[in-house]
Length: 87
Image (cartoon, rainbow, N blue to C red; front, side, top):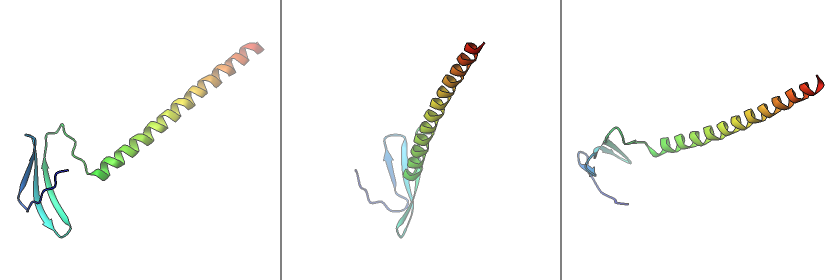
C-alpha cells in the first residue's frame, strides 16, 4: 500500500484517468474528491460490503425459491399421477 501525506488542495493521479483531490482536512476527517470515468465504480467500503451482503442474501433466497418451486412441481406431478390412477 502506498501511503502519502497531502494537504488540502493537493491532488493524486492514479493512472491516466483517475484524479483524487484533497478538498479539506479537519481534525480526524478528510474530504476527498474523486474524478473517474463512469465505467469505474467508486464506492465507500461500507457501501460495497452492504451490497455484497445483500447480493449473497438474494442469491440464497433465489436458490430457496427455486428449490421450493421444484418441490412444488414434483408434488403436483405426484398428485396428478394419483388422480389418474383413481380414474
